[in-house]
Length: 359
Image (cartoon, rainbow, N blue to C red; front, side, top):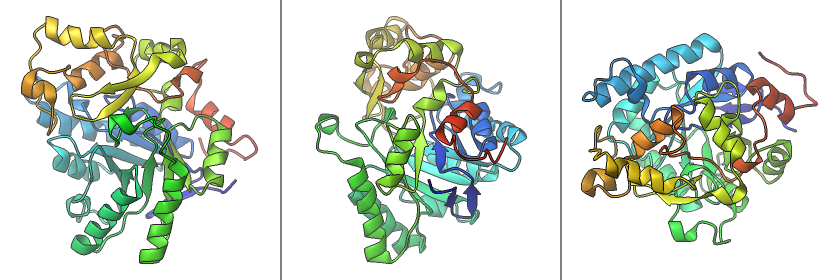
């Protein structure tokens, strides 16, 4: 198995990026320990304000900035020399500020999806060492981003994440009716993105496979199919270091394959979650007459017409342990979870024949 992963100016011993999972599922503890053990740790920026001591119910965006700086500071206390980045969703209203705050706080890379991050190089122009990594699900999306970045900023991505909508958790970059149709081939897309970059621009950057990666067999298959590394989110939820409440992790341990399915997010994107409590998630906000408290999304059916539910608060409830009315995002393989392990044990399982090089 190939050794390490280099993205921009940053290198890690193992070709693993820990997926960004909001709201505070991947915070400073998880990202810090993944970085400590030789992978790339990712803090999810979405919804951090809700648990920040500065949040008073009315200053969401100010508290969000302060909370992100604090998460980065704490993550680097765990892994001072590690590679830690931030997942920034294009769909949030304070996207520009979140990206800049991430850079100011010491993030070494920005991973960006939930929309096309067409102006990301402009936002990070003062931080040339920060690697820029868009998330796509198609070759077409990769082409749009690369052409725009080259035309406007003379900048290439430092890596590209190809997310499989048939297996990934959380918000997905595909139309609901196409997910699970059998038409999508993740590794054909991985190879297509690499071919586009080589044939049209004569460059080779890491292309990362995301979605459905659970164990060493999945990792080996991804690398054999042309990926330069993998992004793993769901597997890291059932670790001691994951920032979610124990009840959230227990929901993974208890769920069955048939419990996992698609929902339509008020953000206008499909999402994959544990669906068995979805009616309670919706009804909770309706019964309590919850108004839109933060106006965090550029597009939100709940903010506009009280349709569905307030997603940031539904995710926040789940993270805090309310698995009855909280929304529990997960990947398609969450049902495979059968124990709580440590991040170090996950890496030892993924790379059993290699001398552990860190932490």
